[in-house]
Image (tube, rainbow, N blue to C red; front, top):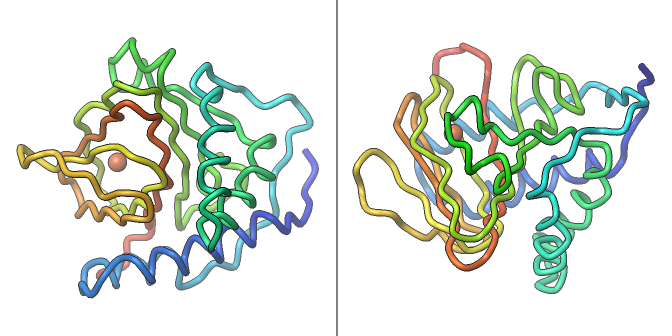
Length: 203
Ligand SMILES: [Fe+2]
């Protein structure tokens, strides 16, 4: 196990916090979630195992997702460039067993960038990235921590039995604690970053 400072990681988290803040609109719940996630980003050092990280078939969609964002430029382009540098260090999972959805094994991949067991260990926050093949649905699920997504591609999101909606590139989705939610890719791969506070402080 070696530990090292990782500049692209810090650039990535700083840009991510700023972009979500800019794009999330005026809403006290989102504001409180953002503060709990990004209010104290004194990150630990990265943990590189020295082994080749695990990848998944859906990781094959990443280069096109990065290229699309870098072509757009601006802060989303910079965010993608930082993530492209971090990506070779990340361990990817497909959640097929956890979500009881065999289709995810070939069509979905996610990775914890920050969080318990992540590239940067943290017990306070979780920041992860998902990539999903076209025409794939990530099924309904729920979790006690609230969640902020930064959407980086086409694709649709849903809460409870509400209609599906398309936030668009740069859109922010807020999931209150324990709400049932899902996402699905249309003709393009879905690409998104999600952030959860893991502390139990009242908010
Ligand atoms: Fe979720």
